[in-house]
Length: 443
Image (cartoon, rainbow, N blue to C red):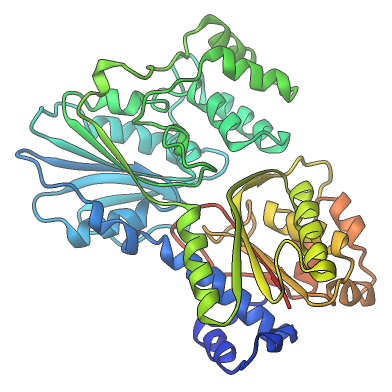
């Protein structure tokens, strides 16, 4: 699996005197991996969190949080906090970080488990009996919806697991999924903040949401929610999702309604978005300029089916190669956001691998076009890779092994396709999360 060390990649890049040198697959891959590593580093908790820490309160400070970056965020708080500190955060298995005063619990993602449910209950217990002089510092990042598993009264963990699995396979956007999740939870959609009363709540966020709406990040546990139970039912109907009877009854009765914007109970609270896809793309663009290439950021919030997004990117690449429009080569096209995959096959996938596989089919070996797609959290879907790499010779190498890109795409098996070519990117958990990063090099 392709896992070039960052220092090796940099050395290879510096040895290339002209942009045309990036035509060689080794140089192109080193460049793309360097851009990915730069993008991830720019949105790490250690880099972006310390400048936004609030002043210590008169009373106690309790830290709570959930998400793939929660442990790294807790570690950054501990390293820079002056004064008394305690708390608990929950993160995905394998995404923990060593902390001394803040307990780190690991739980399942993307489908919640009992460990996440127990951690959520313990968080609620930690914020009981606080006063107006106390501060609750809430550390929230992508993945928190599954990790902060607290079923609403009358629902069970099994109910939430069933709905989560169906949503993940449906092709629903992250906003649609989180709309449903909010109305099935005892803590999401602002309810966690209400549990902290009368303490002041400061929420620090790392955004995995296209457009960076803070109320959608981890389903907004400390922020009021403008969506309704009727909206959640509309999402379920739109995608034909079968839900347990208890879930439907809960939504139809209005029992799952969330506190709304303007609710006086949120007065005095504050939220700050520390890191976003745009920051990661800007960092990669600056790095590309250092390396002699012109970057173009298409968007930080692209959504839609991964294979459809790939076809649009391929069309842009072909236009550049054939006509020098809308950009002149050599250049790097950058984009972020969160695509979706409607699962129809039984292969091993991931939305970034699916994007690249569809891109390979659409480009059909177009010379001079190389690409990388990866998830900034280091995990593409539920696999062990962050993403993969694509070269002009990808289809040729696959054909030599008897593999059909189209067949793998039909089976949602991007992971299997790129694993056989040794083109997966394996970083391990990065402990941050601003969703997809895509870079297409055209030379």
